[in-house]
Image 1: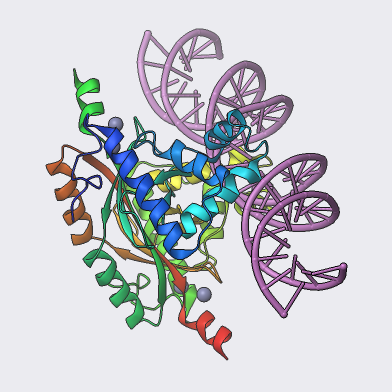
Image 2 (image 1 turned 180 degrees about the vertical axis):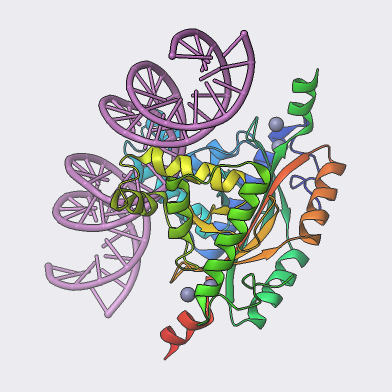
Amino acid sequence: MTFATAFGRDPFRPHDHRRCREAVRAAVEADCRERGLRLTPARACVLDALLESHRALTAYELLDRLRKAGLGQQPPAAYRALEFLVANGFAHRIERLGAYVACVHGGASHCAAFLVCRACRRVAEAALDEPEQALAAKAESVGFQVERVVVEAEGICETCGRAANG
Amino acid sequence: MTFATAFGRDPFRPHDHRRCREAVRAAVEADCRERGLRLTPARACVLDALLESHRALTAYELLDRLRKAGLGQQPPAAYRALEFLVANGFAHRIERLGAYVACVHGGASHCAAFLVCRACRRVAEAALDEPEQALAAKAESVGFQVERVVVEAEGICETCGRAANG
DNA sequence: TAGCAGGCGTTATATTGTAACAGATGACCT
DNA sequence: AGGTCATCTGTTACAATATAACGCCTGCTA
Ligand SMILES: [Zn+2]
Ligand SMILES: [Zn+2]
Ligand SMILES: [Zn+2]
Ligand SMILES: [Zn+2]
């Protein structure tokens, strides 16, 4: 398990984010073609907004983007695009923030752990294997059927820590 | 790690919940005396409401209790009581639900994992040790300072599963 | 051409949570 | 006793997040 972008960069440190953006965007387009999903203008606009940085954005921040692009005016426009992106594994909802990030792992839906900086709201994502399994095993031994696991570590990223401590 | 009440009962199955309630309530009272905390009528009312079952209750459901008890009329009354209970480790917020449960482990603040039934909203809590540590270790190797870890497994409890599947 | 499903526009409303200020209470000191 | 301070509470007003419901349009297909 590592907290990194699709290319092994630490999303909390400066990096060539254009590569993140373009790689994920291309992977999503390919996946949609393959699976017969429609990446409509509104959905693409929301995805692009999420891909501008590793910051989590709220539905209303995304709605602003839709408005500016002339692709939607009301909350349901944003929530519908998000529903599509989350359902298909292209974005994740950060429960702790009530906000959304693009998935850097592309493709099928999966279980992830997040580091969430409470100062800058940037998010790092790690694919999750064993924590989920240990939990699910314990749970199912009690008859509980696990459908989804949320793992979010809230704290302070290195950049914000430096800024605060001088 | 086990998902159980303070007495080893599975909170998703029928059990003598009066023992849960009374034991936790007594533990909280003792802890408040020890630490010089004030379990005021409004705070006790909210705690008692949470202790009526293992279901997560929203702030507004708790506000109803305060209203019926004549201990508060407006949202801040509920949120203030919850802030006290959560800050002192007597209750937990379930991020996935925007709702609150009483802590069955009593005492000092700690990190927990939850099983959350999306049908009945009952919640089981397990004290968390190694998952938190693996995550925190990885995170801190990247310079990320973890302050709090949220682990919530959403799914269907045995009782609700039986009800659905016949 | 008729029907159907998916996507979207729009209105209205529900749900969850806070900011800000003022009044009350009780502990503690002089 | 009177002053002072911190904490707790009451109240108004509002912010932020999310959904229900209805109807239109478009593209596909039977
Ligand atoms: Zn990047
Ligand atoms: Zn940061
Ligand atoms: Zn119980
Ligand atoms: Zn259940």
